[in-house]
Length: 425
Ligand code: GDP
Ligand code: IMO
Ligand code: MG
Image (cartoon, rainbow, N blue to C red):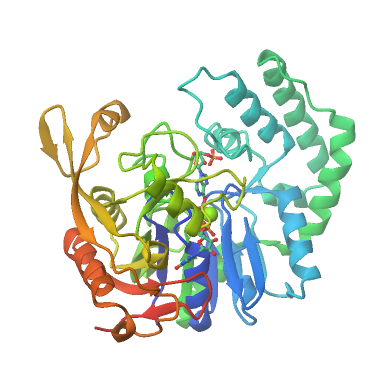
């Protein structure tokens, strides 16, 4: 039995939800450990499509238990809506969902501050956030003023919320934004708090007991290494530790209980929101990839920017994340591309570099050094075994393995469960 962390290795939306769902067939627990409902994880099962924002993707497999860990910021009204939708679609939550009493709460005023900050930011400084209140909620956590899920269990919870809302209204007014109508907002908070109350618990002993028993645990990362608050393209990042290191910090399961890390990575690259993206394609090929790959944000519906595979970023993510193997996603999206390019290094200020610079100013001056690869121009979605893949597609996979120094253990050639090849070469 292996406890496995799955992390996004680019700028998010690599297909984490799909792979969690595939691997959950053999897992006892799925644990989210960071982020909030900025995440949008898609799982397609038969003709059903689910987009999960806060609920771990394991909820879609009977018998799998799910934990929303201490490292998250939880929009309680949003989560209530998400859970009600799941229940309406026949998913049972009974005895299967546990929310850490240490996780932080996101409320309407966080979203309003997020929107107001973005609205006021000068051109070039806007992050293009999902406006889900993620940054302001993590600010409250770091500032040691945040409310946590456990506070819902206290009798004066609504008084605490009122105080916070009043403080945030002062900030909103300073931003020139409309303040929150607190009296209209509090009843909504109360309804969500009551709905979530039965799920709130101390998840730490629960997970330790699971580790002790030898249960199999999957840790479901959100976002991706390039959006990590330390390792990503700061300041165009999210506010949490999206890499494998976030898993122990955001769940209470110690690092030595984690056996392996799977990096989820697309056969090309996408990014939503602002910030540098060296291999971005602004031409017809970018538009083709966006169209074939349905590259629209699962949370905000914004079009995703598309570009070639960037081996510099992949190597960096593998290094920072301790990635043992790749789940290489969306290979099928390149099926019709005649010539595929791959960035193998950057050229910056007259020198060749092969790691990601800390400064985005420097990254913005980087131009990709490309190698060209002949496409396979054959459909791959129907392939269920390595041997069925076109030879040139096999070569592409091996080529990426050579460039990144990490083997591909899982290959995905379509959004459905069955379009997944577990490679044992
Ligand atoms: P996540 O945030 O990492 O879980 O990824 P998203 O769900 O935001 O975006 C991934 C999208 O790609 C979803 O619409 C998936 O259904 C879809 N998808 C996942 N794997 C594949 C694949 O191998 N091929 C294709 N064509 N689509 C895929
Ligand atoms: P999943 O888990 C892609 C991006 C936003 C913005 C930046 C900061 O589905 O891969 P935030 O709202 O977090 O303060 O926004 O991060 N972003 C994501 N991009 N996938 C995600 O999640 C993202 N979550 C946040 O677009 O650029
Ligand atoms: Mg997503």
